[in-house]
Length: 400
Image 1 (cartoon, helix red, strand yellow):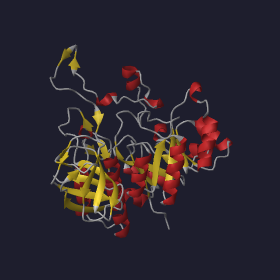
Image 2 (cartoon, rainbow, N blue to C red):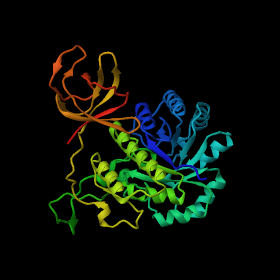
Image 3 (cartoon, helix red, strand yellow):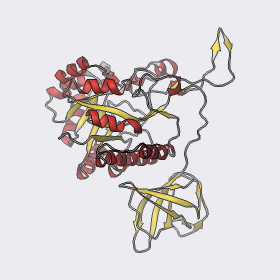
Image 4 (cartoon, rainbow, N blue to C red):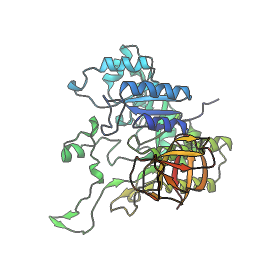
């Protein structure tokens, strides 16, 4: 019997790793301070990686480390020592772009798996077999493949295949972009992408500005709820959520929704209804700040899959706090704030396991016991009274 598909989530720091695991991720991918493509993510010291691996393994999840820069000679100093340290810690896999790093890991005898990054734009069987011979156990496929093309690849290889299902999409081919290099002197393939495709530009023809509106050429974010059943059916091994720089709220809500969807697909023996899929889509749309589309799954992306004008969507600020701890004796929760909120509003909690519950927030108290009516500063600690127990890492969000 085929193994259940893996749900793979991002984490930019140790706290987000724990949230991803608690909210249902089978595996988490993170970046270390070296050799990783997300330079602006907090990223992990080796001590944090060790703690993260221990936490994930305790909860039955895996940890993959991104070692996915395209290195120059000067970038390679300390590579062997780093890989050996990751192996000693017990990471489950590394995600790589460079053949040299694959070769080095294999020559060192590291026990972890090697996964080939989507930066390699693998889109055909010959490339998959090439990396298999080089020592890779899994391929993260190019994001520009249709569902039919993914199925054809699955039918012609025994290598594990991983597919992106949610998150930001690149305007270039699987991240092979030099806009950032040329326009901001930041190398996108060495961890410094400035997201130049999302900047605001003037639209000019023959030297004349032809529109008063700002022009963008970014891709809509990927949201593949309607394709998860088919990706599981054809035998994809891992479904990947993008977003190591995303918030606690993003990770908790997106991981939780896909966890519930995947479980429901299996429990219904693939007979999940269109109405239920619509429910999941509507729930997801509550928390996303950018326009979403289905990427290339249904065919080549048209203009409808792009963002050319300023988006009218405002950043979602429903996420107001997360739970640090709960005092059972006094029935109060210690919370850490995120966005503006007031006392006595209707809120909803989302807890690990996807459990939701609605209640009135009531009064807000400082650590010194002073009652306040408004919280407008992030990362402040307050107490609230709650009659039912709230799990650590639960999130609290306003009801619209």
